[in-house]
Amino acid sequence: MVYKPSEVTPLHAQFLAEVYRDAGVPHGVFNVVYGAGEVGGYLTKHKDIAKVSFTGQVSTGRKVAGSAAGEMKYVTMELGGKSPVVVLEDADVEQAVDGAMMANFFSTGQVCTNGTRVFIPKKLKKEFERTLKEKMSYIRLGDLQDPNTNYGPLVSKVHYEKVCSYIKHGIENDKATLLFGGPGQPDGVPHKLKKGYWVKPTVFTDCTDDMKIVQEEIFGPVMSILTYSKLDEAIARANDTPMGLAAGVFGKDI
Image (tube, rainbow, N blue to C red; front, side):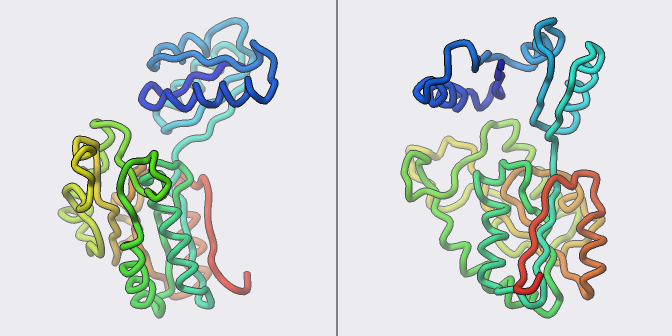
């Protein structure tokens, strides 16, 4: 196996290789190659590579799949997501809020399976929003080496600018209601870490299915709350996406 990590998050590959080594995996079974996108291009065309597995955004996945298929290689793609979280009428609201927060703010939203479209019954909207605002205070910014930290910066300047542009679009163009967060650096960032690419954990409500922040993968800590009247409606809307990578449901009688 040859593993090429993203050029902006390379360090984890070293740790993973050390885990395999310490577990007794023979040398040469797991190999790490570092580099930018062109290195991945070389790997997909190499004659000794029989299968290519790629995790990343859709546009890059198309290029990788096309390159590998041209060499008659097996291909597995795990691409972008705009996954739904559906909260049922009988759900424990506190548990549903905890789940929605985990689905949006874990790893600062940089997870492709994030449940960024949160569907809640209209009659639970006020309670859900109130509970969510209360629990947002439990987000703790800081040094990621500190086990008490549960929220960090984004991975790069380019990605920071992309996420910020979506937050701005949600406010100025989509006209969604900003429930929490928004533009600017969050409060409480330690002085020594202020140069990091920090964004506020952000929640939009009164969202509709046609909004850009609802339709496109942001890959950042941005939650969109949508309401529904009937469960069949919620299911249809939850499934109405070309990026249905994952899903979550909260209720007592599923």
